[in-house]
Length: 388
Ligand SMILES: Cc1cc2nc3c(=O)[nH]c(=O)nc-3n(C[C@H](O)[C@H](O)[C@H](O)COP(=O)(O)OP(=O)(O)OC[C@H]3O[C@@H](n4cnc5c(N)ncnc54)[C@H](O)[C@@H]3O)c2cc1C
Image 1 (tube, rainbow, N blue to C red):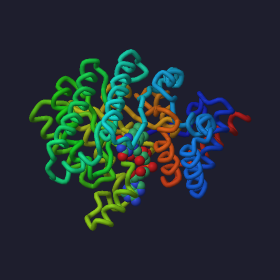
Image 2: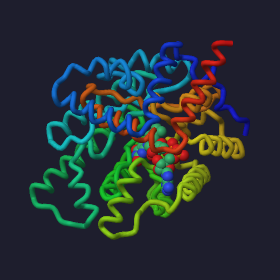
Image 3: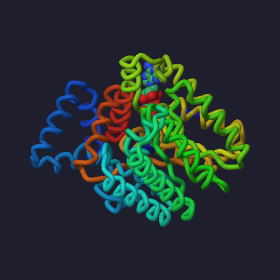
Image 4: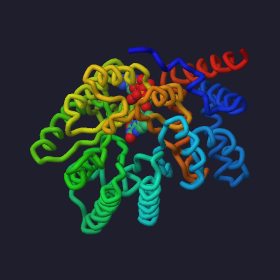
């Protein structure tokens, strides 16, 4: 497969020199673990103390990784990216809420993004997090096989109703919806609920997408079983394929509680698991759809290769590549320039509320080996090219 991801002219075609410098500065900061730790602590303190730091956050890290403070605010970014063929997934990135009115607010916001997507070619998917619509502890309790009190049962019924409202609207408006994957000890309940939604709303095509976290060694077995159920019952399987974002937390919990970690024993095993899932889904693409959420160049090349081998068109609507806004533009923009379907998650929300998301991005960029240095190398290469 021709190597296309090193073309920095395409990758950064939308970035002005100033924006390129800001990106360099940010990734340079993020490269340093102590700086990320100090920066996180200072920012959290400043926000709690109501110091006027939101403007500063907004013009630096926020604008690099987020589209805006609300969905309308994102539109200029959405339109700009789409001029290069890169689509957006508006991601309401307010996390860690635990109250009913907050779940209802997240529901309303998700419905709004579906309406928004319906009107715009540039937004092919909506997205939400299971714990955005219901309490983590409820999912966990189901996963552990514990029974609910009558109050909890009523609360869970409301979670199910919120899922159904989103997926029904997605179906009626013909906008696909991605449902994020989270920690393994809540995921079983989410999986069952998402499967129920697929059963109901994926009869004609994949509208509802679950997430498969391939750092889990049990996920291929899960996918095969789901495929058998889908085939027997006649529904489509939509799946976002990712490696998984909670590795440290998963391993630490397993060790603390003394059970076998659900995470693959090595990075290589995770990579192989990812490739196996991609190939498996392509083998069953007649009733499946893939959203490959990855910043890994090899995985992206592998998917491109497999599509070519199977004579699947680059812009086949059943296959999307996905990256996060502010990261791996070299993959997104070069894929789009070569005719593939690409959508970037575009997080939005009030500055204060998306801080947990931003902190995770900073920590991930510090911990995922090679990712930040790759971003820095690409920016340096582009700077040099522009000077010439
Ligand atoms: C569009 C998009 C949507 C996403 N949605 C979700 C989501 O819903 N849920 C979610 O959990 N994550 C999600 N992620 C994050 C994703 O799971 C990864 O954390 C992130 O993308 C880094 O993985 P990678 O495939 O890009 O590449 P790489 O940089 O090649 O892989 C890094 C990943 O490999 C795994 N890994 C690293 N070291 C080891 C090891 N020693 N043993 C085993 N495995 C290891 C970890 O998962 C780590 O994050 C999403 C990412 C994208 C781009």
